[in-house]
Length: 142
Image (cartoon, rainbow, N blue to C red):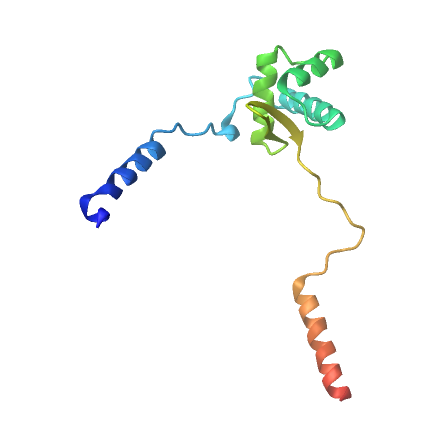
C-alpha cells in the first residue's frame, strides 16, 4: 500500500534529476589539434610510438618521455594533452582508470592490434556449403 501514497514517485523524481543534471561528455572526435593535419599526424605517430614502447603511461610520464625524444611541433604539456585527446577520438589510444584505494590514475595505452594470419579468410557461405556437401555424402554412404 506504500505505492498508493506516492513513495516511489519521489524516488523516480530524484533519479530523473540526477540523470539529467550531469554534464555531457566531451565529443573527442571534434577536438581541434591546433596544428595542420600533416603535423598533427606526425606528432601523434611519435606519441603513439612512445606509449607503445613504454607501456600504459600517465600524462606526466608521457610528457617526460616526449621531452626526452624532442618531438617537433609539440609546444607544451597542454598541447600534448590536446593531442592525446585527439588521438583517443581517432581510436589510436584508450584511456583507462587504475584505482588503488581512494586514489585514481588515468593511463593511456595503445589499442590491441588484431593478429594478422597468412591464411585467407573463408566466407561463411563457403563453410556452410562445405558442411552441406559433407552431410549429403555421409547420408549417401549409409
